[in-house]
Length: 404
Image (cartoon, rainbow, N blue to C red; front, side, top):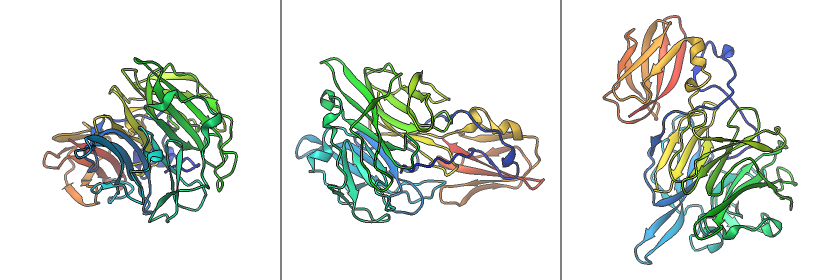
């Protein structure tokens, strides 16, 4: 779900000393985890988007994927919904549901090609609309029980915009408040063949000249410059360098490396003249292509990254401030290795009283009342946990760990 406001906090929460932690100037990411939070491989050619579709204050996941249809002997492109039955801090996704909320795989306008998807509240009524390519589906249901329909209230007419190169590989939209006026604008990447052997990709945006209750796009469009891609694929947008404006992550195609375009304008503009190849801020993306989306998956105020891959799998990159300009250095604590297989080591100047390992459902999976700085976690099942460290001086430290 996209909202105009941006809230930033530090990944590591040190409950007593948090007021003294330094401001970060970059996002850093831990090593990727494949198919996290109960997700399973799903067809091929994934496109993904997050949104709180049941109004329970955690983010659910919508996926478009090609699945083989035996009877028709073709790939069918449908919507697949993963409800988050965990919570905002530790997500756990339920069994997949095909074409929920009134979505109809026979609607060729929606299901054309490999168009990307995104969610946003475009009429300020407290529920989410769905955009797929240049088609907007209005939520005629409610915030906790959506039902998506075609509506004349939301029409995108790209006829005055640039040619789409056939858009054989789709249009990938993102709804973001680019000009900082508290309504959602449209940012998109379009990718199509230039010739038999190459593709062309452009990143563009157009402003919402209506308001937060009326989604009305300008007929003017703007190219995002500063990237060298001829072959490129899907995009995600976030304040990647934490300077309070929107930057763009773009996943490469046909061997072109992924990376990000830095916004060198201001919070109310989008001007780019700097391209940084991956790895950036500890994030290495060297796979063929994929669909990225940023979201605060652990409710710690910063943006994590999930990527749906061409082969149907998901990759999760946890935002990890301890890998960059680190607050952990200030409070003199280090937890490693992370991800961990067997023994977790905690280095700190504080005297440990007890350690708790908490699972995605909030249950204590492991507890140590020892002052030892090492903890054997080999019996834990693979997944995401919180480690909660109680110190004898009354302070508490909390960090995310991943058990391999």
